[in-house]
Image 1 (cartoon, rainbow, N blue to C red):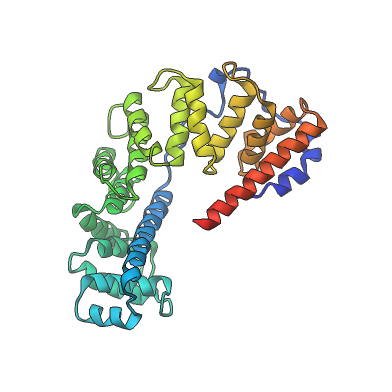
Image 2 (cartoon, one colour):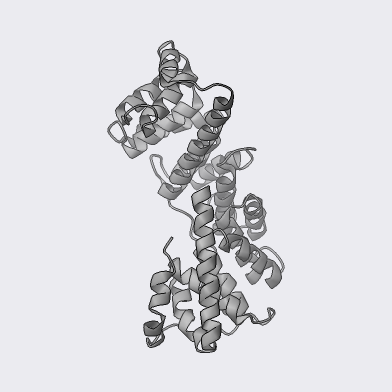
Length: 342
């Protein structure tokens, strides 16, 4: 995330600029209050792969509390045909843990485990084929191996397989098939892929992709993801409450969900929260809080927030501007500290 310092350092110059956007007069006419675009296949893939890596590291950490297995011990088990050890050895080579990083060697061990039907290895092998890591990129092989893992109930593979159908990556585009795979992953308990599948399933209902358009059903799935701290789903839910999409309009509830997403660093939610403080008739205007969240959203890359900063500054005293900047800077520092601690 961008820091606030460049934004704060240039505010005086920004004030002098003429901006094209016209300030909104009420919540109903918000120009930016829309559900986020369905994420790209690469974005879905990155989240699924990171979720798998985090899960593997947690599992490995718990195991090491009772016994630390050396690289040599893992190698011995892998050479004896143990699929779990082969997969773990592949991970060692893939990230360079206990041995020099070697993606081709990682693929070798992933393949041995995958050919034994080890779902995690099948998923990882498929991703290597898609990314061309340790081998020549091959979308057909990617789809084949991910499907094998998905058929075994591997949630991240189901998520990615659905994304492949939705966007035609490695597969012929089929939105109805995508919905079915998202649904499979969306009901998988204790899976890092679950909330992302719920988010995408909600997107499908909101956009009428593979299913009849149904805003209430979209809200249902976004709420499930939002309750698992999925920031995009939280933002989408806020938009629904602000604009009567699948739920009764409730600005206070909208702000609640915007805030949940905003504190996770979502720039659209930061902007919408600032706008709620700034413009909505049903919310008492709190200029300092609006200013704080506009500054944060602007530093995070939201262009409309950047345009709104000087407009709101014109209504503030020098002391209020300094206080709002202090609040934003302190919040950003605390957020970055939390991110480093994860």
